[in-house]
Image (tube, rainbow, N blue to C red):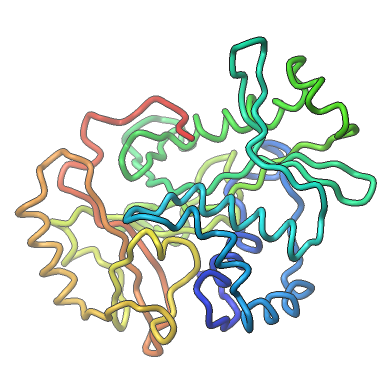
Length: 311
């Protein structure tokens, strides 16, 4: 589990995770945003943690409503980082590229760094490894709701989203931004079957070797496969990014019997073969996150595995 400095504010910790956590894809797969050095960022983040109001205002739109729009929240976090911490100027987001009346695509983020101009494509994704899905390891990752496939998503980022700035239809819009450098900033976790060596999952040739890992298991196998921890917490989507610290986060600590009883009830009530899931974090004696995983419905992923790249 990637360690996070003890920032008290949850959104500040999410921002730290978004900026400094390992990427999902390997360096040779596509053009990537260079790694940020955590030590150089600590003073700015400590100051932000002392007064996070501006950050809260910046992400307020994506945190509205009952269901967090995780992708929009992630983009808001990175936009704040680029503007307020990195101090870049002329920041624009969601720049739509049209070819006559047809939408070709959208550039997630544009900004200037001195004399240089940058285009970043942003994504945060979570995929579960299903070994029997395909012979190629890289084709075996499915989104929790089964609509997304990891290899299709990252191929779209590499082959469409990152090169979009070079499309002929973008020439007029991007004329003031030349020369422009395009790259992707991809964050997330890959989850491996809890019955395997999940904490050493390799992910395939396109996956970054140091990617964040987790586990998954069906709710009816929780009792035998739930990885050990001193306590556990069931997480909402609001808690999917930075590691949990029960001393700072409003989570309820459960013991193993409680989690397995909850999973047993889910196994009895969730429809078999219908994609449902819940994220669980295992905690150490101090309430800090040791690992996390998905408890999924019986029969998951079923027959509804998507063949689209998602967004």
